[in-house]
Image 1 (cartoon, rainbow, N blue to C red):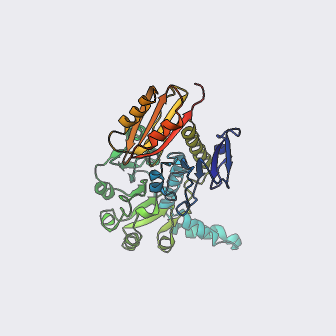
Image 2 (image 1 turned 135 degrees about the vertical axis):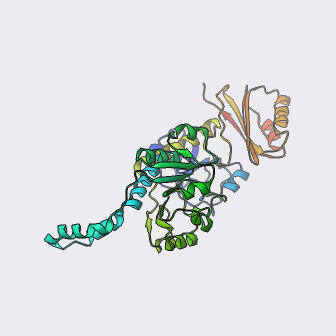
Image 3 (image 1 turned 90 degrees about the vertical axis):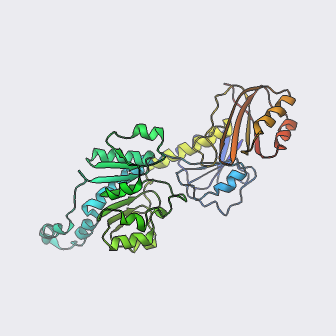
Length: 392
């Protein structure tokens, strides 16, 4: 019986992925094989020795001690793209909020409560203060052309906007999905200089933290409207405040408000609603649960943030999984031990990512404890698993 520790409320559609006769799921499991969570902060949590995998039903993994997990051979999964449509839709809403003074207009309308028959006339007299612009024909720059960025870019094209994108690491899949009307810019500065709107869709990593700063603001068109549905730390708050005061930024729409941002003018703050739809929560839960199940049962890795994607079609009922430091001659040493134990390798897949490597090896028969122990004694080996696969 495999055991799954649940640290947050997870959609039942996701949990139903785990067969009840093979999995135990609960919030009080002390020796879990895997953990599934959303926003629970694991940084002060002691990682059980039994733990093999952690799946975050969402894209960000700042709440998970990824480096510690890598060292202990714990695969960390996220669910990129599962909430992409939800974030895309809110970003488009953000475009309209930034352009048409909708929030201010609604507040004005609310202020007319109790005015009785005077309300229609007051509405007509006051509406001129909330006149906005149209999106059609305006220029928008998209930073980050992953799944969400591509969807936003394509929708902006459909709205009649002139769209440019910047992503030096765009994937082939994203490139295929991008409208031909989207112009790709080679440099971020040129994107900023020509944009009426800027929409940010890049992860928060060391290289992107504070990337929208004083120098970037100076290169922007005066009156630019910025949408940040990625992460708050990408925009430097102090520099943003100064850019708003200087009239460089006309509106800043963010899904990641903090106290500093909430005290700024020209800010439309949304309480992190990007992925807060029933559909997105279901999609994330199903993807996270499926990734855990495939990993525990087959050793398959997909959408891991600390180990490489690995999939090997089943060639036998017996499978060996090895996680190790990425150092020379590991495969040779493993193969030698299997040969000495008269174990025939049917098929093998070995991949590395940074400091770590991962092998899936289909073999003719189940390994003995002695052979597994011999593999563990190889310097650099982190974890060894022997799987009995269901009959193919």
